[in-house]
Length: 347
Ligand code: DAH
Image (tube, protein in one colour):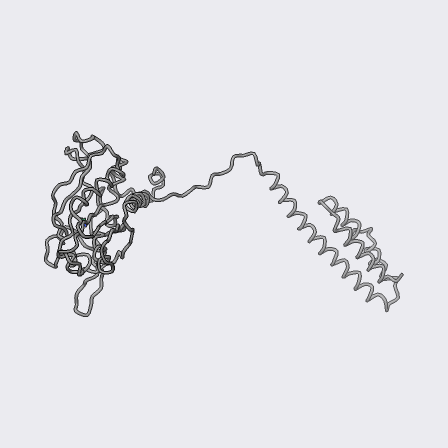
């Protein structure tokens, strides 16, 4: 067997054995056997000088290449075994009997929940739920609701105007101050009979305090048909109040004014805290106002080409945040939008 064949044999043997090493001790034994002073490879290297000159170069080259290859293979094997070792150590450290960490589970925001609850009550009474734009035109938010340019009712809704000017130099774009503009949008696009509720965000230019924020929610509702009367309005809203607040909570109507209804009313429910006897929350009256409503003004119907001689309708609008505030005794509206999970998780 030539020396070159011997070297080839050593290589096969060494690499084969290396595959079977399993820990640092075996690796060291392998290193001594195949790369150590007394290894056969070392013998070959040492005996180079006794070879005929013409063979020295080829044999020396092959032996040195093998040495380098074995050293590299050793380093690779060390790395592989090291990784396996730490991985198995990690498995050993995992105590599967320990209780796991519960992933935090999200939930719907209290305002979203109330909107869902209210929408379900109204849909069960035959109402459809629709949504509308939060950026609105003056026309829908005011004009078409019988609130012309110089009407004092505009002052009661501090408006956030959008910085947009049309060709006529007017600034007719705004953040809707209530959900009522959707009455007009729906009436423009659908024929009576209509029964619709519209939940959504509304915006007012308010200084922020415990009861005012510049964005809050309302739910609007209206029904238009032949022969709709005040009795339908009262029946629908009494039913809503009883289903939402409980059968034993009293509700009452009183006259109120809104430019887009005639007659207009407000509805109050018995104070949950004092049950009607009077306390701080209800300002000693025993009642808490929850919504505005009324019979849709004939001028509003005419504008969208619904004949007020033939059709009539009722409408109502209710602030949403107030409702969980009253229900759970929350005294600061800002809590809803502070993203404090300790507060939000309670609902
Ligand atoms: N849009 C009124 C507001 O924001 C609430 C309201 C009152 C809505 C009477 C109505 C209504 O539909 O009939 O204050």
